[in-house]
Length: 146
Image 1 (cartoon, rainbow, N blue to C red):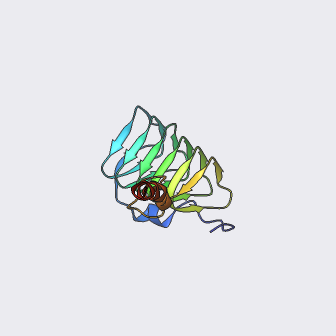
Image 2 (image 1 turned 45 degrees about the vertical axis):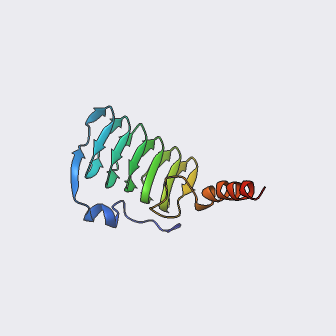
Image 3 (image 1 turned 90 degrees about the horizontal axis):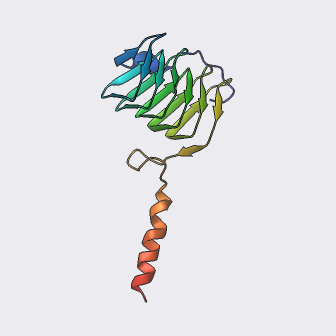
């Protein structure tokens, strides 16, 4: 999707049933945890954890880490993002921090300053690659042969 300038509204953003909304101009101090999808149009000064989607609107700002199944960023994130599924950085979005995701979409004019780790599947831990477990297994096997 590089080189294409999509509208600032993602397809996923319009189809998600949002359980928690932090409105434009609102400021939340502390860690935010939610079992449903969350939409943030205000500011969160703390970490955000939700079991489903997290949508950060154009005026939204998160100063902390984000962990969610799917993440859509139209605003600004100053912190790390761990998405078990898809992370979308839309054209108005800005991320300053590291990201870990199974799938990543970055629109033209979006800004990302950090490192990216792509996970192989949802079943694996965040930031871990399938090859991480192989050296340990190889070391155990070689010690058995001595």
